[in-house]
Length: 256
Image 1 (cartoon, helix red, strand yellow):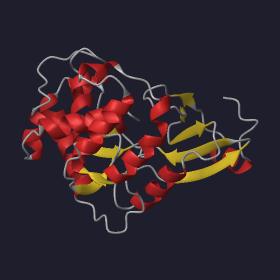
Image 2 (image 1 turned 180 degrees about the vertical axis):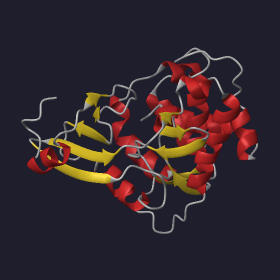
Image 3 (image 1 turned 180 degrees about the horizontal axis):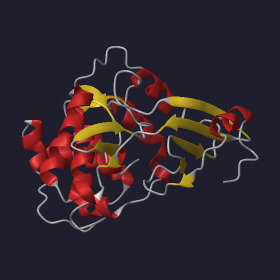
Image 4 (image 1 turned 60 degrees about the vertical axis):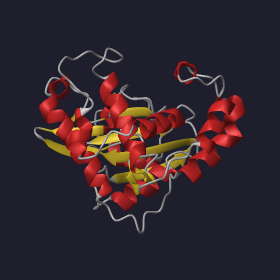
């Protein structure tokens, strides 16, 4: 690991630790791990500020990494955090035990919903997310999923999202509730990682991403496991499956 350009304060904190590259996930950051810490690096001075804001607010409220260092050097952002114990929810140990996995995913969702969001410093409501998408429409590509759902361009999809906005049920949202971002230990939920998109949002924002991630981890997209019924998630959550909201938020995610 080349550290010659790392900030001096960061070097002192990681001195004596052996880090290895973690290539799991799609965050775009370089992620390095030691036994006790995680270091994320992004080639932009503005990265991680929102994630750090949320991590500090969540500290003591939810099981999340603790920020040990955040700084910028040579136009790169560095974020050093404690390491959440356990295994990713996409670990084969859990994918082969859906009777354990799905209730734990439901527990992780319900914990977020139980949070008092009165002082939450960040909103990821539809007003916010749609306003962020609009200026970027010309540079977005038409994805296979968009075409499959009947949309010929990001502009057409955006118009549909504006015209078909669902009623929102505000809760604390993880923002990227996919199996690699949920950690489990034994028969218990142990924590969340990658909270760069966390904030106040509709509960179905997380449900839709969790449902899709669960499906893709067992249907052959990322791996194939028999005996896993993603619809069981709604039974564990105690809510009715809402196909319209699932479709809406999965389509919204195509524009990010």
